[in-house]
Image 1 (cartoon, protein in one colour):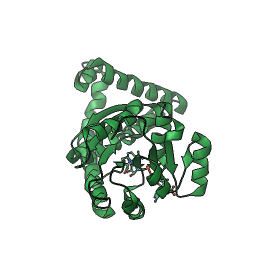
Image 2 (tube, rainbow, N blue to C red; image 1 turned 90 degrees about the vertical axis):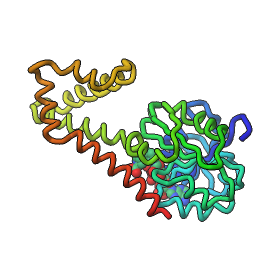
Image 3 (tube, rainbow, N blue to C red; image 1 turned 90 degrees about the horizontal axis):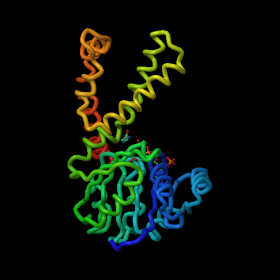
Image 4 (cartoon, rainbow, N blue to C red; image 1 turned 45 degrees about the vertical axis):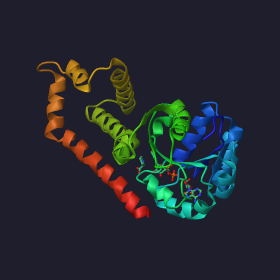
Length: 272
Ligand SMILES: NC(=O)C1=CN([C@@H]2O[C@H](COP(=O)(O)OP(=O)(O)OC[C@H]3O[C@@H](n4cnc5c(N)ncnc54)[C@H](OP(=O)(O)O)[C@@H]3O)[C@@H](O)[C@H]2O)C=CC1
Ligand SMILES: O=C(O)[C@@H]1CCC=N1
């Protein structure tokens, strides 16, 4: 892939497609080098009004863009590829954001040799704090991975992983924000149980989550060490930790992430 600013089309601009589109614009990617597609006219109007980018038919995007970022649901990917697959010249880069779908799913439906890069990002892309994992399919080169990194680095952190790890990545960081939100929601409820006003409980827990996350990132300490520093002998924290262990929170997380990984595998089977 030649250097320079490429035209990128986001195909299927729902939640994740919009995050990518808005993130690229924030990072300075020129609006006239971005295209979006949507299947509902009202959504197309909303996107062009909000971002000032052209919203076009899928086949127009395929013709005009060098990079096709596919952000439809895995269940919609086969129908999309039935439509566009035969029309995609083999020198375009296809970036899949779809959970579960291997690059082979795309390569089976695209001209021989089409480079496909598989990406798993997450919703904190909205605040430039995404975690994005990037893998090369069989025809993708270092330059293709480099371009994917150029697109996603401004949205947060990026990491390259072998494609065989992408279902596990999806379970950890792709779905990960949901687990933290669930924990926060439950801790706010606990504040209500203990008699705090909801707004106060919300503020206490959200700031505690932010402080803990920043310490995890910036201190370089292992989470065990950070937890031990909070856990005083015969104190309050250890009483809570005992209850968490008694209720199997650790085992629940192990099982939950395994279920998410398994579901990613199932999605691939069902999409075919
Ligand atoms: N949500 C998340 O946190 C994450 C999602 N992902 C992955 O990103 C992908 C998108 O997920 P998400 O954004 O949540 O889903 P959404 O349903 O919000 O977005 C998908 C969009 O694709 C559109 N679409 C479907 N088929 C076509 C088509 N043939 N042509 C044009 N547009 C089409 C849909 O249109 P319509 O509105 O008409 O249905 C919808 O707007 C999925 O594959 C998911 O696995 C990855 C990481 C995180
Ligand atoms: O729940 C899902 O399937 C998508 C993929 C990762 C996060 N959300």
